[in-house]
Image 1 (cartoon, rainbow, N blue to C red):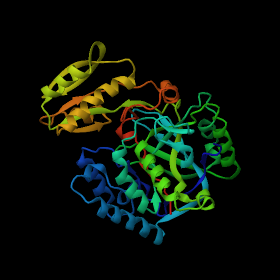
Image 2: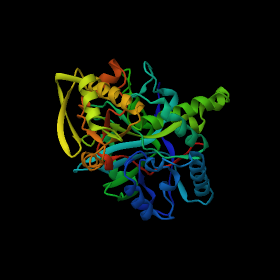
Image 3: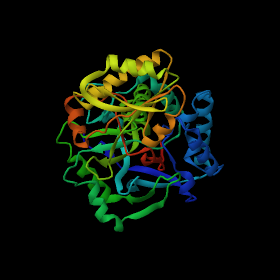
Length: 402
């Protein structure tokens, strides 16, 4: 499909207070309420994307219906009170400092959801990188269906080894309009954005289309479930629309950031596992019974203040993660709680929790991503992450979806 990724009307805070406005993706630091408590204190009652999301750290014990209504009311108020200012039909070229130094470069625009599907065996140009847990979609769909705005934390990857697309903007950025330039809160690094409009934006569309020589043009690197929720929301909505109404309906598209998988700032990090409310000896026993291979890969674990290793089958990274995940799914069915952690230090801290078992997973080689998705399909859920937890995309740009 041609023109699957195009410019969008971008909305940004009119008061220019970007540091309070931008907060990290809602699925980060999901077991660390103290992180989100600090963010809440920093933001206060000032306009912020924090007031338009529900951090997953707070999901337990709240009414999603009430939380969604509160967020939707905030979106409507921001629009009615001119809290946001529009940049018409533009891409945003983004440079983001990442943990440990270096820059991740990307382009924010809208992707056509008709060109994307998360289902296994799909042949659409844009595909998921990992298994979508369908049970996780309904609350996300509920939030999106009632929302007037969307904010992207989805990172979409292109396979541009010759560096013809994103990197061309790096060379031209001095001629582009800078629309933000600030430090992200909570050690998120520095970020700068430049508007790409007019003929340069149209040239960019053609440059991206030129990458369509392979069957997979886009792979969803981060935010798979958020984009899947957008897809299912559109699937439901378009049933009541005429073909003409479907053509340019705002909900047909989703705002994302596109990055080159070969960018030095794209660093694949493992997503570790931790099991709470468990007997650590039972967890280790199950791993040794159902995932063990004497010639397999050694995975480090922490349990009860002790460190050890367990060897797991390793025909491929996907197979290794799948064998571990089957054990974790069984533990969840027994009443244990499993969480997915993006940072080594965060995992080590959580491993101090009584009755927990922390398991460190290995990194994926980035050059394997497109080949795997094209030839073998999707990875198991939560197989990898782009960067450390603080490198995740912060909510920043907005777009109307109603």
